[in-house]
Image (tube, rainbow, N blue to C red; front, side, top):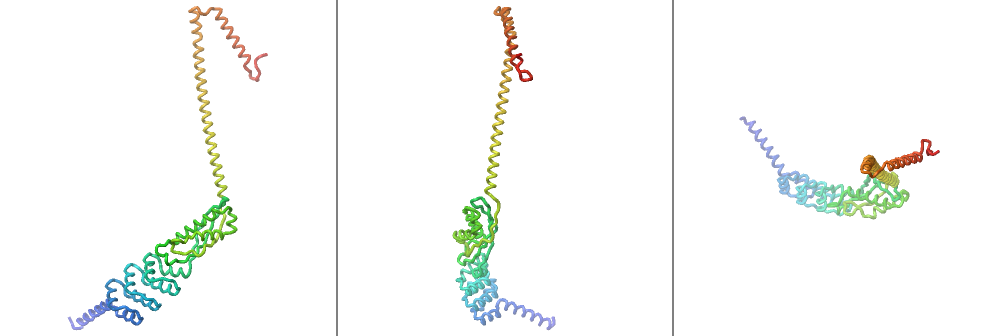
Length: 328
């Protein structure tokens, strides 16, 4: 190996060693912190590197907060980063809150950040309230007319309730419920159309922002449309239901009448069969009377004459095809 190759290897190893030293000993970052009047030791920056915490993130956030007049602890910021928080966004939120005279300390800001909420956006929302639009809410007044209302809700973030407070979905649900309740308690849809601010007053008086992360500043009814006549539809449905019930009962009575008629016909046929069976036994009874001597010839003739006379009377009383009797 030549001397030139040996020197090149030495230079390469030196460069790698220098990079390794500068990586774990961020002298440039430490010098930047010193000239920015940020109190952080070089040892602390080295330990940050060993704990896999980027020193540049912590130092940059410290410089930003210090220049804004905040007093920050590097250890607390490092702990927040290791817990999965966003240190830069927390510092920006603290700076914005200080400029807007909003009471917010580092512990509250980190708690909001770790709760999954955007603490910087929450501070901005406290300064500039947000307007959200509710979906169309359908309700029916007491006169049966359906109304479709849309509202605009002005919200301001409640910093103290951001941890554990309900979100915008809860606000929208409660506002929708309040609109339905206020319209449903109105005697007429005309009164709602004439005074839409009545809905706003009723809804605001319910305290819908209780337990939420927001404060409702105002509820404005943007639009009200008239829908269907639900009362008339319900009356028509009730009338159709009553008609169907009446038809079913009539069909039941008709079926019972048909069954009774069939039963009576069956009984009549059974009676006729018994009469025919009894009439068939008459000649045998007459013959038996002749043999036993209980019936004579003259008695038989009288019986025949009586039958003939009965048949003639029935034929005379029976009407003909013109509707008149056969009697002349």
